Image (cartoon, rainbow, N blue to C red; front, top):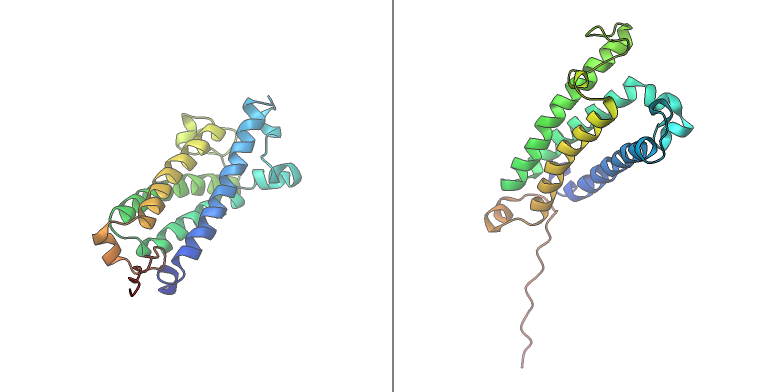
Length: 180
């Protein structure tokens, strides 16, 4: 784990960001299918869901992604310092709650018993907001502090740079004065 937050931190963050953006793309395509193309919600399954419809219906897949996000936010956190660590921690805390919501959905799907008197598995905040909109909201409130944390991590102030132990910020070598 130590190399993950030292010499492999930048690579791990890049892979994590790519996975996160791919997940975002799925949700944005689904939103486009609903609100622009006018598709009924059950047919609006994003890109992968068009080819593998069971993916969208699989609570295991949704919970699996939520837990992977949670684990990676936690595992990559030691590489952050200062302001970046604060923002990264905000994303981690929100993702922890998001994971709880997905866990509730998974339990309902696995037991065949929907909570709250609903006909289908329902999360707590889904009692107030439709699932598509709620997941766009959750993805936003996790993604925004995560990106702010990454931005600040790659642009540390002097104190943060001195405390950094990873390879993310490459300080350019000072130019050597040419001999005259």
